[in-house]
Image (cartoon, rainbow, N blue to C red; front, top):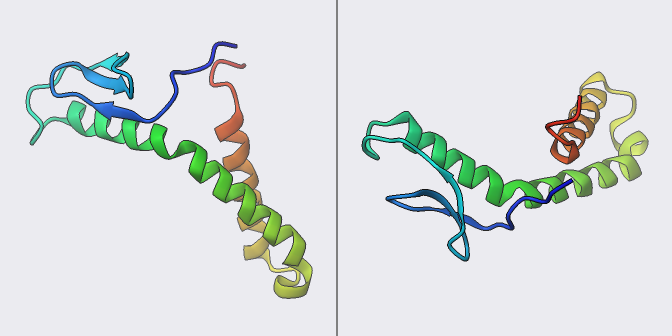
Length: 101
């Protein structure tokens, strides 16, 4: 599988989304930055891409701590079980290939 362009990515007024070295990641058609969903989407994509690995690492670390302390601290709580399930699903989704069927 081909790897994506390394982060950090940034927004460019004229082009769209660029890598740190200026490689074009994506272009967007937008009218103006104040009232255009394309501009907001571009901002969201850049924030999501740039925070992806930090968030994934934080989820894994939290899950490790929860696994180590779960029964002593939380017992058999349904909320706790749901939180663990949600963390595992988020990690799985973050690591999955979006093109895999």
